[in-house]
Length: 168
Image (cartoon, rainbow, N blue to C red):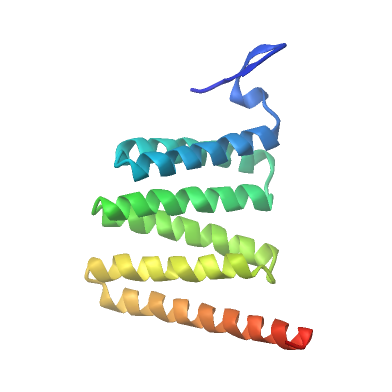
């Protein structure tokens, strides 16, 4: 377990930290996982991503509906899924991508106009289709790919409408 050094209080355990500090810690762990993955340390990357995910899940319990936490959780799930996919662990990758998709669906429901989350949702429908295709589930891959295309078309229409509203 990790802790932080605080100049006037000594060591602060995670549960004593403010939620924003804990969220920053989770984001830092995600970045550390990215570095480890880049260096080829896939096991270390998974460890960092899982620690960030655990911290995010704890934060979700006390702050349900916090969009920043949801975004952090989605990011962790995506990164774990990507490492699992790179290692050929397709069942685990698929599980992580589906978990991430569920988080992104919630984020889109909380803010239907958030194009970034809609785009990420579409991307991970595509990632799910990729894994399903590798696993030989052609019907599932086609279904997920159709969802990807539908989401991208919706996003394109929304962006076109926003541009025409601006007079562009």
